[in-house]
Length: 94
Image (cartoon, rainbow, N blue to C red; front, side, top):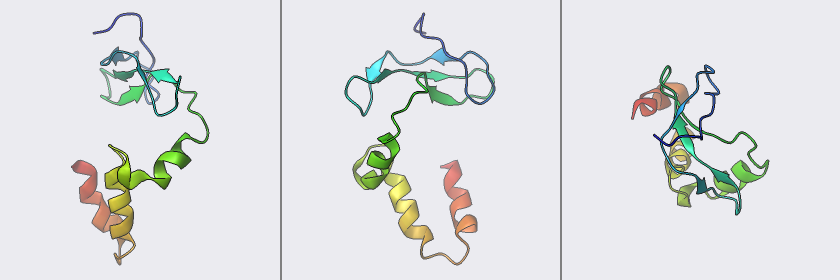
């Protein structure tokens, strides 16, 4: 879709197809885009040099971050479960 921004899939190594234009991520000046693998269908960032503190920052406020708020909800629910894996498994599909 967007030529010149191809990147290899981190899962299977096939060159992905860019599906977004470049955009600034959660860190000012850190520009990336999203590609999709035609083989395994993984969607991935074209950047692999994620700042080490990025996920600490996101997960500290996951309930407020679009795309991560469900993980905060999952964490709250699995604390109350006798068998968290059994409870969490159906969540992976939706």
